Image (cartoon, rainbow, N blue to C red; front, side):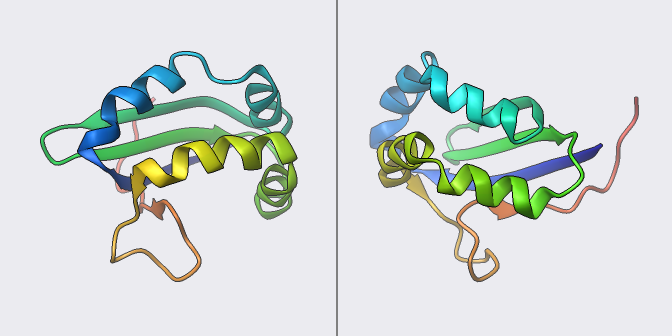
Length: 109
């Protein structure tokens, strides 16, 4: 299992809407998350900095392939079209990233 953390900004004008839509994530999006071997997926909000921190546990054997399958899913693409305009990617992210990946520095079970 891999533990993955990532961070992105959020437009403060969209925080209420972001919370609203994530209180009722589309069932097909949730199915795709599970099919992509993702478990324990959580998004945290930090105000007043307006940062979203995502954490999930990957239980598959080919993260790149599972993420490509997710990105190719039409319903997930539609979900992202709703979410992405609300998000503000960090300038320091690696080229090609939307959410900036984070280095794990500590974990205790």
